[in-house]
Amino acid sequence: MSNSKVIVLWISKHNPLKCEVEELNRLLGNYKLVIYPHQVMKVEFIYKNYIKPYLDKGYRVIVVPVLPLWMIYKLVQLGKEFGFEVWFAEMEPVLEVPVGQDVPYDPDCEVIQRTVTEDGREAIRVSRFKRFRKIKDIVFVYEDLDK
Image (tube, rainbow, N blue to C red):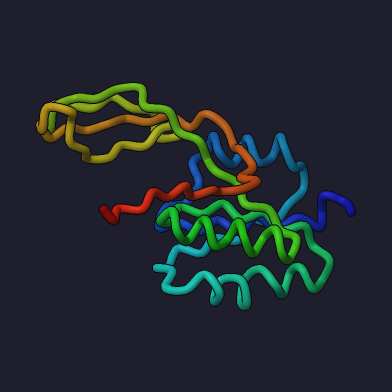
């Protein structure tokens, strides 16, 4: 299958960073980026309306979700069943400053978000895009809480 038959479905309230797009270009060459910026209520809706139509046309589909873990888990399970990939945009924390201070960051490769430090203080964290990783599986290991 040629790279021109690749769809990247970006599921996030935020568009991909310039660095992320550059890395997708490097990894995939020619591809189509489809952005779904809306709230996801059901993973099955995304599969039926945004993934399956491209699979049916012979496209390689790569989903990059920014969603709760249980939704990513469902996407990975569906991907194993129906033949699409789920990728993770790995970010690494590079700076944390108290709220109210200037936050130097590179908007092409970094994001800022409000967080709480280990000692309970509010802070602003800067994270930098590191790489994409394919999620092959997610495993939950449970422990019963009954006495």
